[in-house]
Image (cartoon, rainbow, N blue to C red; front, side, top):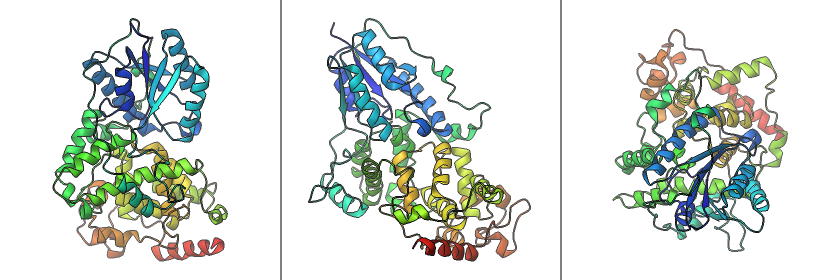
Amino acid sequence: MSAPVIIWFRRDLRLSDQAAVTAAAARGPVIPVYVLDDETPRHRKMGAASRWWLHHSLKSLDRHLREIGSRLILRRGNAVKVLADIANKAGVEEIHALHHYEPWWLNAEKNLRAALGSEKDLILHDGNYLLPPGAVTTGSGDPYKIFTPFWKSLRTFMPPSDPVPEPQKLDTPLLWPIGDDLEDWKLLPSPNWATGFEHEWNPGENGARANLDKFIDKAADYDTGRNLPSKQSVSRLSPHLHFGEISPSYVWHRITSQDFNAETYLKELGWRDYAQNVIYQFPQYGSDSYREKFRAFPWRDMRKPNVYKEFKAWCHGRTGYPIVDAGMRELWATGWMHSRVRMIAASFLVKHLLIDWREGEQWLWDTLVDADFASNSVNWQWIAGTGVDSNMFSRIMAPLTQSEKFNAGDYIRKWVPELADINDPLIHDPEKSGAKAVGYPSKIIGHKHARERALSAYSEVK
């Protein structure tokens, strides 16, 4: 029997259209491994909502592997040390994995090559994005910083390669390494605050494809429906894509095979690639404002009790702005928030409350099931006006106007039960309309005053 090979799973928890799986299957006996590594990412280890998702996704992947005669080996610890140890003890000569571009994984890949030495090889494949970061460049060979020219250039390389089906069988090693029991990792919350997650999501490759099938039925309406929170004409594929339960190539081909113009949705897939390209160029993008002048921006001091109290009111959907509160409560209940509402809620924190975008990014890092280093950082810096390609800070969203414009009444009634009996258009601003419900808070700050304060702060760095 030939020497076994390892598949190192990370955010690529699928068997179909997974280049590392395909390559390893052709080499010999396969040892699929997932390492729960909280050491390498340091403060970027997965948040609570992502850990809930991971538990169920790993369970699904193991079940899927067993269907083709294999199994998933779980280990906890430093990924480099764990993989090198398994490789040495099992006589492994090759480790196959998909490229990951977060700065901590780039370092881990470099360190793993060194730990394996010259007699063993780490073979990295593409597949987490439509194209590898750095593959799309300007005429002078530089990476793009602005989305629109990036997208136009990326589009010329499309469609991506056809998806590759999963292997029918994986050969097994003579002796399996010892693995952990998933339950011992205690990824699920106790007490269980994630009961709402269980009704909303089905993590895993089958769940990802089922979600895509549901989206196909309404995708023709995506261009306008994506902005209407009450309508939910969105794909809800973001956590599945983040954990790699479905490939962007598979999504692209499935969407473009339908009889409607899918360009708007394809741009969203392209934005995901763009965000990863930004992080690849600027690894500190998740912690440092790109625009230098904003590094001196007079954010309000979170150490002051009143500022911290306002931040917690935002976190828990108690701002007095129904559209913001509905979004934050949806997030808490389901680990996800409608994309239009994400923009409104994020803008409210940054511009109405003048709280540093990094505070919001960290809260969503812990509470989103699709928390993604690249997408989160790029989207927050876009909203805050601090990014390489971003909205101007002086463009301040009016949450009450946005709520009415995008017909958010039913969405608000679902997530803010105190307002369930208030009809449109009063529900968008019940305080002003005199329809304020018992138990629902007054506005934490008036829109006009918040706008003036934000513009005044901006003038200090402008």
